[in-house]
Length: 175
Image (cartoon, rainbow, N blue to C red; front, side, top):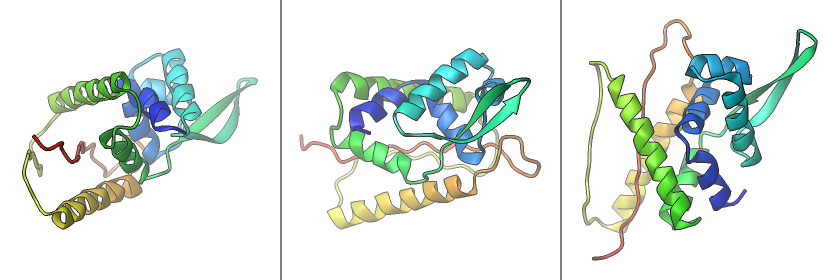
């Protein structure tokens, strides 16, 4: 899978949501469509795009009413950081990077509208730091994301709460 394939596959808000949803549980297109409130056909299309890019895989095929339903799963907690590294390092075409950023912005707007009171952190920084400090920060955020992905449960599991984490860490060109 190339950086460009990953950029193209993730440059849509529904596909970003599917990756998150499929981290907690394997789901069919019908199940994912119901959870995301999109048609089964739309969910199926977006799942195929993610599968072709190698971001999800079929983990089960179940028989339903004389047909088969594929259940997909996103299993790699490290995947978002490979994606971020490919984007930050200039992987892929400029247009695809812009589409990815726009998809993330759209998804952040959607999630922000669902925000409730509780433990949260909002931060922003454009700073000059020692490269060793930068590597520690990237590792710490990576560890936090990996923890969330490792502990993800199926949507609406009793005793769980929906949460959101969006991070974009990247070095800048010198002005």
